[in-house]
Image (cartoon, rainbow, N blue to C red; front, side, top):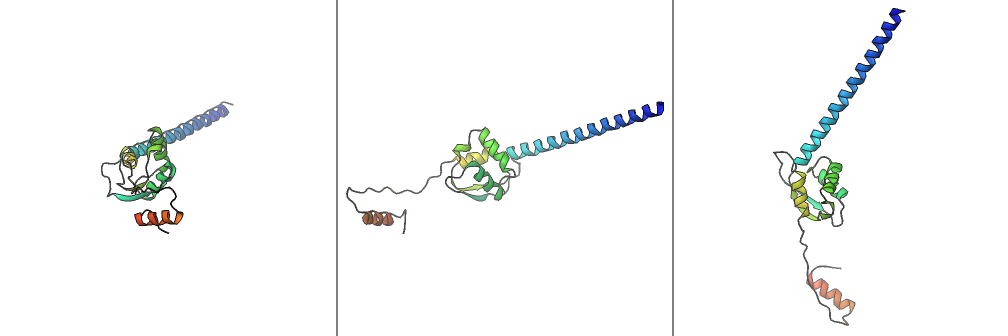
Amino acid sequence: MAHDAKHRKNRKGGAAKMILIVLLILVLAAGGCLLAIRKEINGSASAGEPVSVSIQQGSGVAAIAQKLKTAGVIKYPHVFRWYAGKQGAAGKLQYGEFDLAPGSSYDDIIEALSAYAKADSVRLTFPEGTTAIAIAKKMEDAGPVSY
């Protein structure tokens, strides 16, 4: 009888140790993930050579984050999306061509992507009664469109 009680006590102690080990592993893994995310957000001291990233007009923050990952500027697009939203910058990101260095901080990337992309524009005036053909010709001569 005493032998059975001792055996059960050892089993309970072994299960408790196993649960503690699993919890310790989970805590260490979560801590490692948080450190990696923090390093990604703050950037590394040795940012790489700038790469050109083309952002299409109308791109949302998810598409921009994916472009940045594909170009090697960031590692975690979902973290960039979250951070841009947290900073209130998601709606301020612009389209255009940007030279961005891999390993830059998210704040630097957001600042670069928030710079107004000045598009080439031409001002045209059409007198009342101008035909569609004359409008098309004038637009083609000005350069913004061709057909």
